[in-house]
Structure formats: structure tokens, C-alpha cells
Image (cartoon, rainbow, N blue to C red; front, side):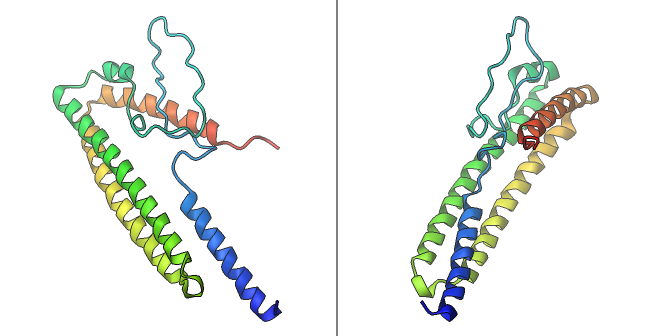
Length: 180
């Protein structure tokens, strides 16, 4: 093969591999916590909770507070409605984002199938559009979570914050690379 042709070909192949790897990144991939909620307020007689496999994500459980936490916070009917709205919005966002990511993958496959007519600019523009759509969905979900937060009294906020801190620490430990 001519050396003048092989360098751009190798560079293009490297770009395609990098783009493919970027598209393959999804929440909950191996090595992450997967957003699995674990109660931090043990109930009476509750034995040790079995270890959850890292990387397993059930969209139905991500962002759902344990029932024990909900009881501890003693939410009013209005607060419970706000929490339900935020959680339902999060579920809808998760599902829509999965569709967006699959559409991205399909479009990338189609674009790469064009052979020499492949244009990475099209892929980059497509990814920017998809990220903007997902960002808009996230903004909407966060607005509902903030409404819920604002409706909590100081004791409820303290209880929720304790839970959030425990989750933060747990997730940080799961994501930490092993010492060398």
C-alpha cells in the first residue's frame, strides 16, 4: 500500500474507533455504581444487604428512594406528589435518552456505511444535537427535583441529605480504581 494513502486511512480508522467508543458509553457501564439506590436506614431485624453487582442498572429503580427513607421523611401528600412527578420525569428522561442513543448509533452505522463518502462532520453535528436534546430533558427533570427539595422542611432536608451523603460515599468507593 502506498505510504501516502495509508496514513490518512489509519487516521480515519482511529477517528471512527474513537467515535464508536464514545457512542458506546452509557450510564451504569462496568465499573460504575449504576445508580442503584441502597437504603441507609436499616429497619428492625434487617440483616446485611447482599452486594449488588456493579454495572447492573434497572431503570425502574434508579433515583427511587427506599421506602424506609420515605417513611423517615414523613412526606405530606403534596410533597409525595412532587416526588412522584420528579421520579416519573426521570424515568421518562431515561427512556427517551436510551432511544436517542440508539438513534445515534443507527445514524452512525448508516454514515459509516457510506464508505469514502463518510463525513465525520455529520457525526459530530448529530452528536451535538443529541446531547442538546438530552440536556434539555435533564434540565426539566432537575427543575422538578428542585421543586420537591424546596417543599421539604429543614428536618426532611437533613434526613434526605444524610441519605445522599451515604450514597455519595458508597458510589465514590465503587468508582475508585484499585491501588497499584
